[in-house]
Every structure is written in structure tokens, then in C-alpha cells.
Length: 500
Ligand code: PNW
Image (cartoon, rainbow, N blue to C red):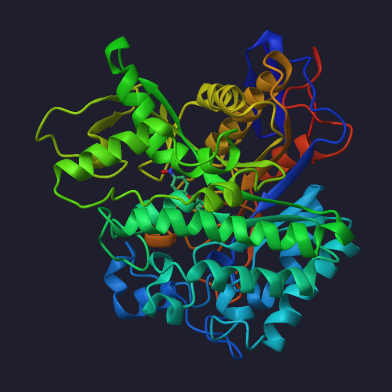
């Protein structure tokens, strides 16, 4: 048993003998992440356009648990330089942030680029580079221009071109300085959670709307990927992919293996198979399931819209790495007929799967976040098994609590335990993980949970107009892991290492 002291107050116990000698290899990249809507504020600053989140919150304030909003959020629209200092203080390699589509293109379309929007993101990128930190940019982290929503949003096939136009503008302005791009953050959340009414735009149509969204989000990603590949890659040699949110799903009993495979394909394979598999297109078992089910329901075609051969080719291989957001695990079993299956909390109605958690898994402030570190290793193994020896970049992983406390023991433990599983996957299973991103740099606007669920390595005091930031113990822990030369989640044998 070894002890790792964190600023003399917090001690993390390392129990597993096997991992104490493991180290992240030189070149492994550590980063921290945020997204525009969750931190920026400045919702109507200068000529910024309205997003679907602005619209939903302002017209239906009761849709946010604490009736808060993100009009100011962390005020990073004004305090971005301070954010960069915090990133620098941690000594990480990269900062993942997102561009707000309606801040850069106030009308949603590429006919007008906001000069203030351009200047804002350009300054962040230059500020990072001056500090020796690589910018990693997400193009779409859920803040769709409201105007495009009124034209059907992600259910309109034309959004594929609108998104590609937006991507081309961002690449033209910033690809000289940004080498790692994420087109779309969590298409599954955008389509499946939003189209069950839980997130903006609050449209409830999982039967058809969510599945149209799935197809268009994949085509939008792939078209943007091809724009970069053709017009920018020859000059800048950067990398582009998508960030999929995937939990670890395991069967409850041997009898539940088939339903687990179907649930995985519905939730995760729908967004990864078309891009990362050797054959492309929808996962075959899901495609059959949806075709049969749609027929039984009297639809004249499958609710899961077909791809043409050209579309399959366009999407297949549209990646330079595998972007993975991971937080939690579930146990899957076949649902009992008539059982309530509230999405993700109780199950997945579309495939009649019930979801459970194990009693010994830890809890977080977010009710969906149950702690099972081994799930990450199993998931990394599964990705390798399904899609081959692909380069995996963990684009999000993190833990939420409720308050402003700085001694966040549980978050430190979460990071320690999940990072240990990354090390084991790399060393024992030869999974090619190339980087890890902590969500999040700061406490921020946690979508419908408002400010009730805090993911920050730095606490933010939202009651003060100055939005002061304060380092948590987890910020120091993560800085210690990330700092060059100390790339281990566990201390060397018999030593106690203080992390400043
Ligand atoms: C992500 N799940 O969403 C988002 O990318 C962030 O914007 C968000 O703040 C963060 O995670 C924390 O919630 C998730 O069901 C949505 O496992 C759903 C899940 C995980 C992450």
C-alpha cells in the first residue's frame, strides 16, 4: 500500500501493486476541456446570433433544474485570459474548447462571419500557442443557431452542407494554428437525448426525428472531414475526428448477451460503425432490427434511414483518431413487457433493454454518473476488438459533485482510478491510447442541471459577478500526473510525492 500526498491534506491510497510501476509514455498528451455554451456567457455580445440553448432557456426557464441560465456562465467571454493561465498552471499539453457556431456565423450561414467572433477565438488560439499549449477545437458542442433549428435543424438533410460551410470557415481562419479538430461532440446526445426532449431544442420525436438526426450528423461530420482532407490537410497536416460518448455496457446474466449487443449497437455502434468499421454503414444487426420493427409498425420504410453506397463511402474512414468521451457504466438485461424505461436512467425503449447499475459502484452529483473504473478498460478493449488498432484519444472523462468545496477527494479518486485503467489498457492490452482529456477545466453550466452538478478541476463562484476561480485538490493531482517527467498516476515504490 502506498500513499500519495496531495498538498499535505489529501491522501490517495494506491492498493494495486501492479500499476505502481506503470508510466504514461513520453509523447502521451494530457489536456483539459470546456465548451463554448457552458463557459462563455456573452450570449448576445456584439453580433452573436441566438442559439437553440438561448432560445430554450429564455422561453422555458423551468427546463433548467435550478432555473439558472448561461447568459454569463463562467464569463469566459471576458475572462478567457485567466482561463488560459489556469490551463498553463496545470502544465497540460492541450486545451480542448469549442467554437460557438452562432458567435462565428451570426446568421448560421457562411455569408457573414462575425469579426468579433473571429477575433475572440483567434486570441484564445494565439494565447494558447504563446503559452506552449496546443489548441484542440470542437466545431459543434450543441449550440446550434436558432435560425437553422427553425429550418428543421439536424432533421433537415441540408444541414450537412450548412455544417460543412461553417467548418470550412473555421478551418480557413484557424487551421494554420489548430492541428487537432473535433467536428461534433457526442452525436448520440445531440440526436437521442435531445430528441427525447431532455436537451435543447426540446423536440420530442425519438421515433423518427432522432434517427434522421443520426444520419445527418454522420454525413455532416464526414463532409467536414473531407473538406479538411482535401483543402487543408495537404498544407497543415492536422487531424480531424468526432467525439462519441460511450459508456461501458455489460450483460446482467449470460441470457442478456444478445440484448446487450443490440443496446450497444443502438446507442454507440450507430455512431461508430459507419465511421470506424471496415465495412461502413449501419451496424448490420441494428439495421435488421430497425427494418423489421418499422415494418411491424406499419411504416413503409425503415425508420433508420438508409445510406446510399456513396454515403457509406463518404462516411467510412472519415477519421484520423478515435475520439472517446467516457464517464460511466451500465448493466443490461431484457426489459419485462410494460416496464417503464425512462431513457438512460431505466432503459432504452427502442430496443426494449433495461439498464441497471451495481450497488457497489460509487455515485456522483449527476444521477447518471456511476463510478466503475474497470468499465473504461473494458470499453477500450472492445473498441480495439471492433475497429482494430486505432489511435484513441480520450476526449472527455470526469466526475461531478455538488458544491464549491476545494478538497474534492472523490474527484481525485475518480481520476486516479480511471487513469489507472487507461494505463492498464495501454500496457496489458496494447490499446493505442494517445491522449487523455479531463472534463472539465472549470465548474460550468451543466446543461439542464444548471449549476447543480460541478465537474471543475477549478471551482467557480457563480454568486460573485467576478466569477472567481479556485484550484481544487483535483487540479493539483491532475497537474502532477500531467507534468513532464512525472507521468504516473501512482508514486514510485515507497515514496510519497507532494504535488504543488
Ligand atoms: C458530456 N452519459 O455529456 C458533454 O460533452 C459535456 O458537455 C457535459 O458537460 C459532460 O459530458 C458532463 O455531463 C454527457 O449518459 C452526456 O453517460 C451523457 C453522458 C455522459 C456525458
